[in-house]
Length: 287
Image 1 (tube, rainbow, N blue to C red):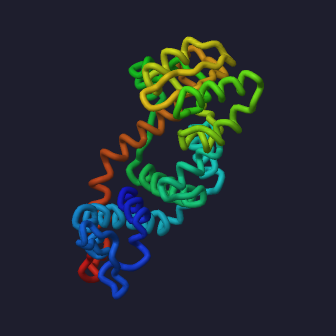
Image 2 (cartoon, rainbow, N blue to C red):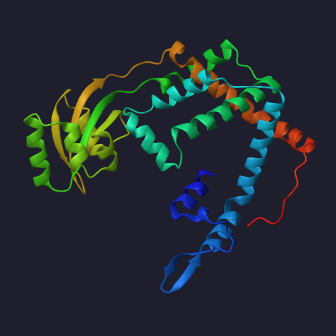
Image 3 (cartoon, rainbow, N blue to C red):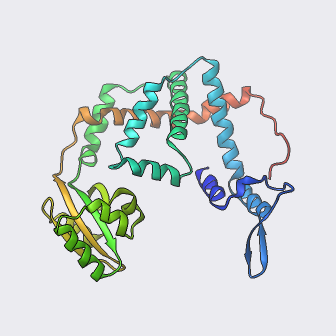
């Protein structure tokens, strides 16, 4: 569903309904034109039925929750937003990621509110619950995977040539502002946006050459690393050792995981019941 939205938004295809009088040329390939209606027809054939089915199910669930008088208060949504924000080291990255996916913070809040509303309905109707002994069992089974691996707080500026990298590195050693130089000079779009700050990264997240150097560096140290298509200047701001998982810190995430797993198993039968009771009428041929 998000894939369709991104494709359409990128090409500007949703500005005029497919098949309408305003149908327009999208691209010409060696003199042969591809029209908007052709693209939309292809998208419908490829994704339409599955997407429509998903939308009908979501609407039925929202209607049922609203008919029951179920509500989700703002603090619940805000709590989920905070969990989402903690995934990013820089607030600017949040807006950028949402923008790339065709969303915004307000849209995200609305989507989360719908998700929480539907979850509340399903937990109640499907009688889903998670006992403490289940949580402890899953924790013991996944203890190693839940542990926090070693990490470094990394800043990086990617430059095209060694001469540029030598110049920027010299300026940094003289006390120049890392963030300002990253925004002005870095080849990496993420680096420009965040001032080169990539937050905490764990082993396995970086290219092998960068990872080997970064995890051997001291906090505050600057290094230049030759890469296949660039010269990267990196700085480690802080290092964190591996840390064992603690039950109290992960139990709510484990609870969410188990609730979602139980809902997923019971949901098809529940939706079948809603669809049998609902009046679902096609409104004409879709394109």
